[in-house]
Length: 389
Image (cartoon, rainbow, N blue to C red; front, side):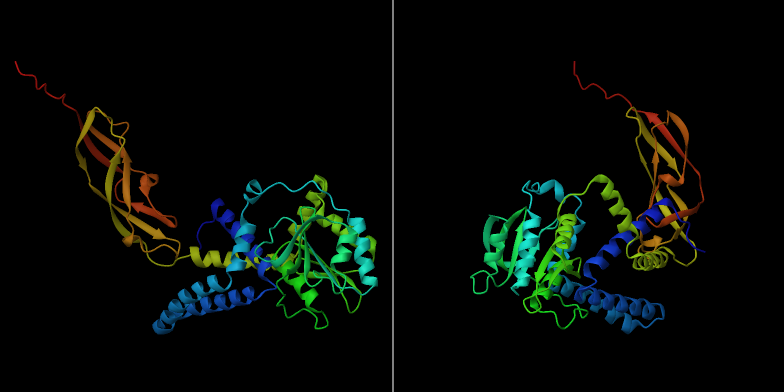
């Protein structure tokens, strides 16, 4: 028997699908995804061995999982920090507004292809929405307007700042001679050099757009979202940078949302199926219905009344747990809390309903032995005056 699906469960599945897909998108070209897949495999082995009663193996895997979790936080702290930053929906409220300085992308594109014709290597990073402070190392502060002559002078062979990348932030050259994280993906072709690996490495970890000029081949490439795109003409580079760096109209944003929704369709379907299977595994719990005795408590008694008698003081409940994340109902602090706001002087009967029973998520009431509680209330006696004659 499968648990009934509520609207909350559908929202639960959709939210987890979105989060898991985001993590997959961010880490798919990094070692972090391989480590996560390995941990998932160990988790499957743990649940299998635990269900089969292999106590020693399941205990060792449980203790090993705690140690590995700490090691993951230490080793992948930069990736975790970047992922948490991407998940922050309020980051735009606290960050400064983007500069109104507009780039002359036409001049920049002409300069890039001029460097390519001269076989002069170049690496230019354009920061978009995500901050790159934790990913870019070293660098010489510049704070200059972006111009073709400045970019060309930086990458002249033998120039002091030619070795490294240039960071363009808020329409200005912020840093020069920066060091970028290299890609560790095994899919990067062997003929690509350090510049291309650095461009891919940064684009795998952020939403930055990175322009690369090959010194050996004189070719121009653009790295975005962990993918390297060959750029053949100056007009093509100008068009791609314009679409990436300049804000779109609302109509274009709607089209972009629909395109992103159906992009990578099969990975999204696979992740959705994985989340549904995980949800069923977590929420479905076999076992007999358990009987629990819960004490009866009261609240909201009128100020002019005092409670003198109540019966019964405890109610037997039949509970069932539908989540493996919740312990046995026998180990939970469950009470029946009744509202006495409508009682009057004398004998009263209070209806007991399931919504008056305080239960943790994943626990439901199957049956209760009593639906009425009798309470007796009396008026409070006025305090006697202590005045002496």
